[in-house]
Amino acid sequence: MADELSEQDFRVKADRAIEQAQQSLMDLADHEGFELDIQGGVLNIEFEDPSPARFVVSPNAPVRQIWVSALVRSFKLSWSTSQDAFVLDGETLDALLLRLTRLHLGR
Picture 1: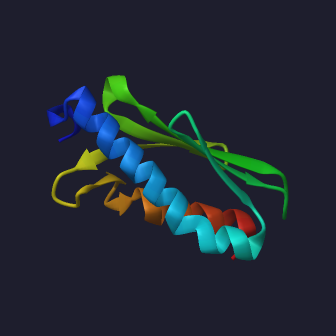
Picture 2: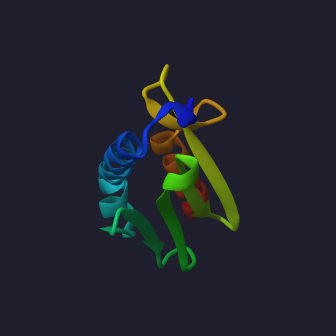
């Protein structure tokens, strides 16, 4: 459960998860021409095409979740010890971001 993580453990796992998410989208970003940028532990995914948009992936330490703002929605992922990842309904952060990115790109 997410509440089992200390704040320090959460920060380490969240930073690692966000960096891994950025890496997992690099090839697609190069191919499709969107930008990935981490600043202050927050990943911004910025699109010009097919329409301007920004996805924001940020840690929320008080509740030990990673929050994703994308496609006019908010997704709140909690730590899953069994999956060793932040997940929402069984979907990992990497998988969620890939699915949302492809949806925005119309793929």
